[in-house]
Image (tube, rainbow, N blue to C red; front, side, top):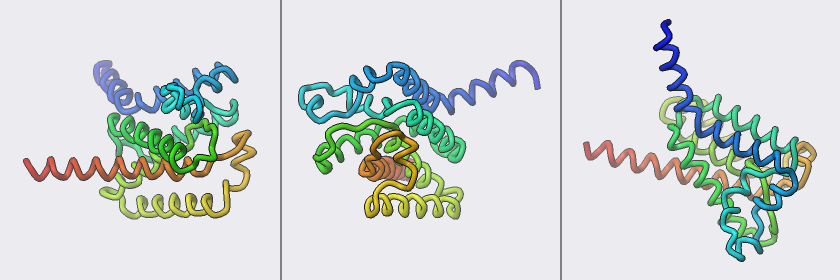
Length: 204
């Protein structure tokens, strides 16, 4: 393998990985800000109503503490390895944003009792849902198991509350509704994307 080939492989890897790396880097950088960054960035109903709309995205990048942050970053990379190249860089961004906004809308309109929220876990559920739907085309067996596992987890959380040990691992309360809203947002993005691609293919 010559130097040109090696550079090309690195460029291809970065092109595929940059949304995940950027997401992790943003979360880690905000994590350095501690309590001040969390207060500035968290989802907060009253602050949103005062016009602080950046919180719609920043809420998913700030965390309860170092343990919560590292748990979510590790899960992000695990999902990326699991899904491999099933989602394009644009799809990673689209699914992440769709999941984040679905969580914001769900918390604001449906879970009015939630005054504040932080963390990437809801978006992670959305990315996993989007990836599982994309996987159905190429590995339906594995994708089916992912979908069933995700649905069972979400159903458990809505009926019984957080999974054992997740609250102690994250260092604070787990808003399980955010996982449901995030998964719904990611799934909706993936289904819409497949519909658009199907129509584009049919028109060629």
